[in-house]
Length: 480
View 1: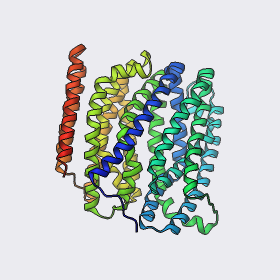
View 2: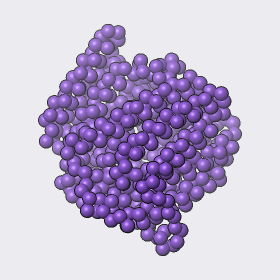
View 3: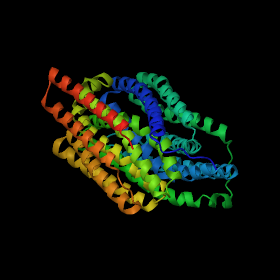
View 4: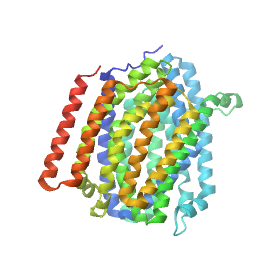
């Protein structure tokens, strides 16, 4: 039996820092690309790109049977037990089902292309665009499954390299297309990015475990437990992607495509920035939590330590982001995107709560509680659509940020109460103290950003960032 990764702060901080650094590099490259795309396409083109990407993600989530998540859980257990032959056989089962679901997703996109055009756009006919995007749905499904295999086999450095190479290729290959063809180059760009990511991931995965497929009924039936769990993941993914799709479509119909582009820019900037810390969770934290999911004490220890490390890293970053976003937005996009600044600043508060909630939320996945996971995700998706659209109708673009914050608050309490009752999760005193203090600092920084300007704005912002960093350092040294 292999020894599983322990839950020490050293290991958690190591992998969180590793993938955070890689994510930071990826963000820099992606932001350069976004800057160029924003200058080339403008808010309307960004909005169009957002709608196409949301649709592809929705269809992929609808048809992949949750293999990208359920495969990690089961493969991690087999890998940690050291059963090599069983591991290779399980990978064959996963890949066989992946090819089936990828084909189904591509066909689904083709058949629904006309319908997708009607419900997504109030102008023009985009049926051909959606039909041309159908291969991207299949490629995303294949990439997701092969990434799950690499995660389960603890190929963290390989995943990191793939991520870096893919974002560089996206910049080099797609920017010229968008420059010369404008909005007509959006669909080819999406296809190119999907293809390069799939090729890079499959190349590494096939090296470790050569491709073997079997469509024998007996072999396929061995994936029934994974598919049963995956159905709930699919439904949850449909709700999540559907919520994202619904928000952008409703905003497009309530306002204009430019508003969709602004919302997408604000949402992506905030979630991508916070993703520097969150990126290690699906890659490293989830497999390790799956390995100890039957041990309540070990699970609680691992979750609480992951939250502490996440807060130590993300709190100063978020405070600095709130202060610096008026400069960052025009730098990364253009002056046309300045109306999104207030929305980003309030959405940052929701990202802080997400840092405290996300490790607890993975407990449901690690235990394979498919029905519970689906209900929680479905509830969150409904709340998000209602809150964001309601906020937009009340306060415009700023209201979308208010809606995301409301969703974050509700999610935080629901997940923690559920985990306490269902699994016996107990939040540690250090998590409560650190979370409370850092959130107050972040909230104070947000209020300062609304009421000060000039030198006083920057001075207080720097002071608050340094205070948050000092508190993070203190609690890291105080760790249990």
